[in-house]
Image (cartoon, rainbow, N blue to C red; front, side, top):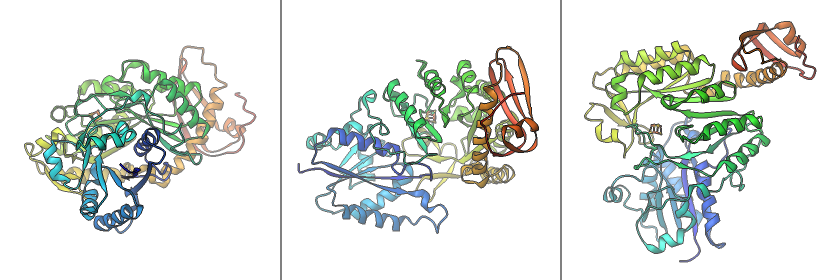
Length: 500
Ligand code: SF4
């Protein structure tokens, strides 16, 4: 085969503070560069779907036409589509526009490559090769796989040997205050019926090794990253203490960035809760989906009592927690959905986002949704979304959540609000103050106590404050929670901190 000129096409929903190249794309590019010849080239074409959120809307035909022209103009001889549910409709249109193009091989991988081979061939008649597995090994030896001329490729990489796209410079952290993704493990061994993330064989693979993670964390610290989204479907589920090691190292190096972890309360152990409670920058992201036992059973979710117990503990310990739930699930009713929201609020969860159920090809629910009398239609991206259910109370749930959002803020898009940005600024000030105060506190008493820090003292520290005092609740060595009776408005100078 002549020299490879590969164009990798992907769609993303990028936030302003994230690197321009998505993490998954960078992994494939890194693998390609590592394994192919020096005459072989790879470039990327990324379509950012978040551009269309506030504009005239997403015109899929227009975008497809533009992408098809860019692919043809690029002069590539192979185009690879990394296909997710939100890009499926778009890529099908792009492929039909490219059909008949001579000398252009077309490859597809990603979560939409699922199911039996003849269905896939019908779904995407223009595709020459389908990659069923994670793509790094295939990208690293692309010529070999194409020479073999097997249309369906499955070959897993050695996950421990994968290069970090941060450490090899593929992802550049261009400025301070960015949000990055960091991968600890790939795959999931749970079996939620609606989920398309897990592999068919539900295997989980460790990515890299502890030394790689540590080097990445040091880099994030040096680059003053604002937030690390940890990619591990179920944090600390390895049973090898890796989650504890990870958090302890973040603490040891004094990483200031927020660290966002995906948690399943059923397997969260006491030690992890206690450790996270000492780290104000740790955020638990918990996909609860539903707390109704009939609903949980239908979607293969775990032990309700354990979930409620652990979540209550997490909230009591003052860990920053964000919860997501879904509406439109099998057997769900308006009263059960309302009760879920009320229960979560009662437990003290401040950030709750609810999403309409989406149904993906290749999931158990895809085969079952009609049995549960769920009615679906395609949204703008071509994803099947529930809009009516067995009791015909789906609209009531939708309206209830809309009014809940109005009352509590638009929690789903909270990160985009002025309030969130203002809170981020306030948090920086609060964190600085907290560290300054903690460095002066004697933790050896072993008793729970409240420490009130008065307005005068805060003023002395150089803070301008509206309100009366700061409250730190400390249980022995562990900081349980911190809250402000008042609003800290500005940090002027923290040089001469003395606790009096
Ligand atoms: S725990 Fe998360 S990743 Fe795993 S199957 Fe359930 S939804 Fe999917």
